[in-house]
Length: 553
Image (cartoon, rainbow, N blue to C red; front, side, top):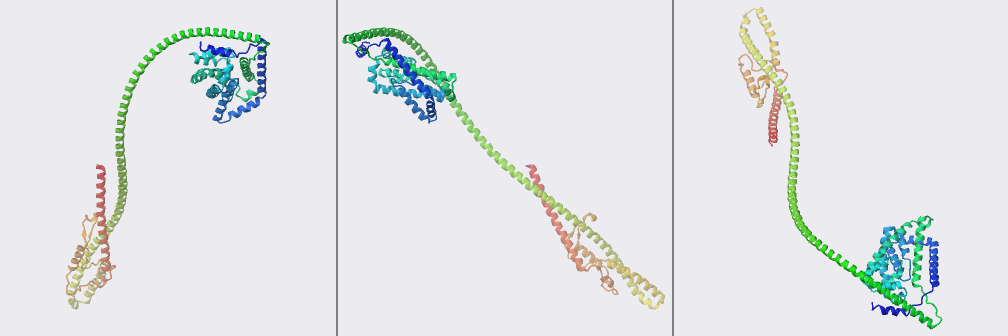
């Protein structure tokens, strides 16, 4: 306290005299008049203000940030006002919460820039004029203590002009970071309130209409601006009075010195009270600090215990994770093996289905060929039956012919024997014999026409399959030829009978060559039928073996 006393008395030599009550009233009236004029001008130029706000709201984000930083830097300077207007404008353009965010960020940056500018460029000017206000002198004394953060935060909530607060904080010895943090905390309530007020007039219709809400909000804003401006003028707008003599001036300054001395004593008393209260508060805070440290130690032990549990759980989780990974890997390998087996089985099944289809097609083709072969075999059997019937008829005719030949031979022998007797016999007996011979000769000719003349040597080596009519006996064509030869050769060549047949028998329906060719054709057909039957049997055996293999598999 002793270090600040000379500085106070040094500034006391330049302090002007007190104004008369009339002077204070006149200053207040002037301030109110100026505020009213400014409010009226802004009210009637609201269309221009609205266009400016709309233009700003339509710009890029970085342009809006630069504009607001410049505005907040400007209103942070001493003797400047408009901080509330900028806050309300943010709420008007962007709403309560977005406007609050823009206001907090840009106001913090603007307050920082204004603080650095005042501290670097306007420090001496502010120090010369700041001691005129007793309130600000007390504020500077309090800022030199240990509760600067609390004092700055509370001062931001007072109606002291915004620029004057920034000037007082700039010439103090408060660190910049402490000043900035306390300003952010102290300005937040007013920023929230002003953003809400701006939101009530965010609509263009609310601004231009005569509704009670918009009018009340606008009037409230301008009244606050006017009060702020008037308070700023009253705090900083004192003018020194005029003196008629040097003695009057000395008395005035002596009286002011006594007043400041008395003010200093009062300030000291307040400071002592504040220090005693702060000591009590410090003791209480130390007790709370000890309790907090005890709780912190307990919390730290809990944190350590939980950290150990967390590490154990992490190890367990990692172990389980590794086990699960190994299980998943093994299951994936098994799944891949099963998939490969499934693919192989699918391919095998597809191949079996294709083989089945091929076998079905082969079976159908074999069945169709068997049906064709059966039809052809039945046709051959029918032809064979016809041939057998013809052969039987031929045998019967051969027997009849042989019998007739024997009868003819006997008759010829009888004729030759009776030839000698005819000369001695009467004509009636000869006529009777001739009549008998002439009646027998046409019968022999008719039988010879029906006879199948067999060549003596017919070279047919094919066995003819006979149907069920003759017991399934195979008839050899060579044997038939030999049999016919034996029949023809069995007739003895008597001297009186020529070896060739009768002339009437040489005109048969078929020649021997045509008969031989027909028999050869029939033999070839029968041989082909036998080959086809053998092939069919082989195919049937192969199909049966395939079906048995499928059933076994």
